Every structure is written in structure tokens, then in C-alpha cells.
Amino acid sequence: MSSSISMKILISLKLVVGLLLSTGGNFHCQASPPRYTFVVEETPYKRLCSTKNILTVNGQFPGQTMYVHAGDTIVVDIYNKGNRNITIHWHGVKQPRNPWSDGPDYITQCPIQPGAKFTQTIIFSSEEGTLWWHAHSEWDRATVHGAIVIYPKKGATYPFPKPHAEFPIILGEWWKEDIGQLYSEMIQSGGDANTSTAFLINGQPGDLYPCSKPDTFKLKVVSGETYLLRLINSVVQEMMFFAIANHKVTVVGSDASYTKPFLTDYVTISPGQTIDLLLIADQIPNNYYIAAKAYSAGAGVPYDNTTTTAILLYQGNSNSSPTSLPNIPSHNDTKASVHFTSKLKSLADKNHPVDVPHKITTHLFFTLSVNMLPCPNSSCAGPNGTRIAASVNNISFVNPTIDILQAYYYHVNGVFGTRFPNFPPLLFNFTAQHLPLYVLPAKRATEVKILEYNSMVEIVFQGTNIVDGDDHPMHLHGFNFYVVGWGFGNFDKDKDPLTYNLVDPPLQSTIAVPKNGWTTIRFKADNPGVWFMHCHTDRHMSWGLVMTFIVKDGKGLGAQMLPPPRGMPPC
Image (tube, rainbow, N blue to C red):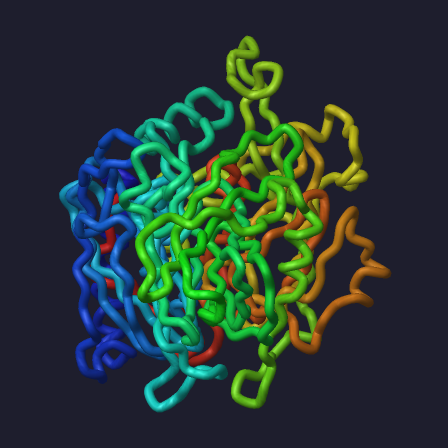
């Protein structure tokens, strides 16, 4: 009998046993949760004077906004009627004990193949605010995404005055080329991808692009009222600056956690991140531009230098366009970027206490690098004929042929290794202007880091200047984490921890590690399962700047991973 047949029999037997054991579990002693249908399909959309087919959910771009309360559970039936494999990730939803519905392909599931269906159960817990859902296969999230609004539990209220109305504001990115072809060409060539053609606000490029002005998104407000803007950066490749002409906004949340309110002229937001903003319509009733453009600190790194716009339209005014754009920092204004980010702090009141780990049991130091790999006859499109790669601790991740979660759960050997290093294999001046050639290559491998249940974890992310330094928005699945410190240059293990904020650090699931700098996060590994961590700049992720944690089961049913659902997609 072949090993593949034996493995399928083993998986089937364990699935039956798991389903029998789960009949007393979370999903069977409650009323049926709300159910949604997602049909992934090709849909023609016209932008920038031309029409192309894009992948959508239910024909919508952006996709539908989902509304839930903290602690809810929902079920989503996903039908893939598109022309390529797909998965859906619920970004920032911790999914306690339920990695089976987290979504990253070849990490927690095999992709949903064309013509197939997969049902995901999404378990919300302590999240309150704004999150989003998106495809987690190749770069399909460019068009397959939508907002998630998480209200407080029924009977509870916001920790700020109730707004007059709420609006999701999704920043997006558009290529005239087919996004699947763009991805394939980058992988095959070993080089970088073309920059996008436009940025978007709620699916529209805005007044400054050709053939776009009639459809510019308009945000209608009443003078004197307060509005909650749920800002989401779904842009594939760039951090973004965002501002509204003549208006300030008050930041009240990020990544579905409340923050201490602060007033600001502009916002810096990383790919994957969400920020909740209060806007008071307190200016002379008129029309005002809302605008967003890229923040790109990497020297020589190509970026889209266009500006997307929407219009803040006061009730009673005409639909004529505004005359002036808001003041937005320049594309490489690192000082402005970190100035905004450094003001994020947890609300930390009696109803929203912080629980920062103090007694760290697992210390990790992860270098984040863009690397080069040799190509036969220098035939690749990277620098000097090399292939561009990226790495964490000099390991450039390679997707396995079956997902890591199934391999872990069913004890399938040979799919992944467990020797992901706690520290980089080589110590050097990580942020030096000129680095020796021997630090350029990375090792390609599929390694995971095992964490004990309830371990207190600290990760120091250290950016490097290998090939070219850049910001790295790091996203951790399955957890939120406290951002306790950051700085420029090389992390100093003796001095820098003295500057940590252990009182009210922001609680996030995505944080931008600054170019040639460091960021420290802490979290409690209390969610058993397989959890992905990666740079949310998609070309960096595709080059291998990702890694995977396995959090072991604890004692007792409430500390153990749930069994797999029926109908997991085959590989």
C-alpha cells in the first residue's frame, strides 16, 4: 500500500474519532450560529479606462462588510467558482483553539480548488473594533477582501461617545495587469513585481486618475456630527499615509483593541492594519478631499507614487470637486511615520485592562531580511542575475506540499522541521551601510518553532540592511501582542529593554518594524494550534519572509486544539 494512501486512511480514521469526541464541544450545545455564503468568482470590473476580470466574493469589490458582536461565532460556506485555488483568512480574529478555519494556504489548510467548497467556523472572542477578511493565497487579497465590524457585547457600549454613523474606509491597490499573472511572473523570474497602477479608497481610484472622477467615493456628513471611520489598509505592497483636508481625526482603536484617544492631522497605517478614527464634521460646510498615498522608506525600492482620493461631502453642498489636497507627509518621511505609530497606547482602563507578560519564558530574536540566492548562469531578474529572497533568521520559508496543521495533527513525517532557530545563525552589524557578501544568501527550508502552552514569549524583530533595508509590517495569526518597544539601529539587549512600555503598550496583531530598526512584542502562547507569522508586504512574504509557530496543547479540554471539521480541502 502506498504511503499516500496510508496517510489518507489515517487522516480519515482520526477525523471520525475527532468528530465523535467533538459532539460535546463548543458548536453543539448552542443555537446554530449565523451562516454566510461566499461565492468566489471572476467578475468584470472597469477601472482606469479599461475592464478586466478580477476575483471577487459574491461579485462585490470590495467584498461585503460583516457585522458581529464580541464573542460571536459565525459560519461561512465558501464556494470556489473561480479559476484558481483560494483560501480566506479572518485577519486579526484569534480563533481560540480553532486553527482549522484560520485560512493561510499550506499552513492551516490546503487551498480550496476550483469547483470545491469549504465551510469555515469563525470564533470571535475579545476582539472589539475593526478587522477584515481577505484571501490568503498568492496575491488574491488584492481584490478578495472586506471589512469586519465587531461591536461590543450586547448591552455594552463604546468607551467613547456613540457616533452619529460609521463608515468602513478600505485602502486598496489596483494593477492594470492580471494579479495572478503578475505574481507568477515575479516568482518565475526571481525579480521584483511591477508597481501598482493606482491606489483605491473603497474600490475607487478617485479624481486624480483617468476615467475615474464620476465614481470617486463620497462620504456624506452632517455638519456638527461625529463619525466613526473604520480604516483598513488592504494595500498589497505599501504602508500608507491617510489624511482629510482641513480636518483632524481622533484615534480610538487599532486592530480591534481600544487605544488612548489622540488627535492627529494624518495617519500611518501598515498593510493588514486597521485603525478606528473619530471625525467631527466641524468645518465650514463644503467639499473636502480625503487622500492616501504610499509611505516607502526603502532607498531604491520601487513604489507607486500616485495619490488616491475620496470626497468628504457636507450635506447641502453640491457634488463639485474640492480644490486642495490634505497635507500628507512625503513618501519617505520616516520621522512622520514613527511619530504617529509611537503615539498608539492601550486604553488600559478598568473595563479594558492590559495584561502584559512580565516573566518571559521564551526569548526570541528574529532578523528580518531581503536576501539574494544564486541562479544558474546568473539568469534571474534580481540584482546581478540573482533570485530575490527574504528570510526570518536567515531561513527563507518554503511552502510544503500538504498543510503544516494536518501534518502536525496526524503526525505525518517529512512535511516540516522543528529546528527554527531562536536567534540568527550569524551575528553582524545588522544595519551597516555596507555588508559583506557572505551575509546575502539565505537557507530555503520549512522549519517551525514549537512553543509550550502558556509560555510567555518575547520576540525582538531586528530589521537588517541586507540587499536593502525596508519596513516590515509583521502580522501574527492566532494572537494579539503587546508592542513594548521599538528603536532605530541594532537592538541593545542591555539598554533597550530599560525603555520598554509595560504599562499601556498597544495591543495589535500587525506592527511595522521600521527600516533598519527593531521592535519588541510580547504575548502569552495560550492558543493551541499552528499559527502563521509573516511580513504583510506581499512580495516580501512571497520571497519567504514568514515563519510558523506550533503551540502545544495544554492540560484539559479547554486548553486543547479543537478537532478538524468535516470537508477539509484535499491537497
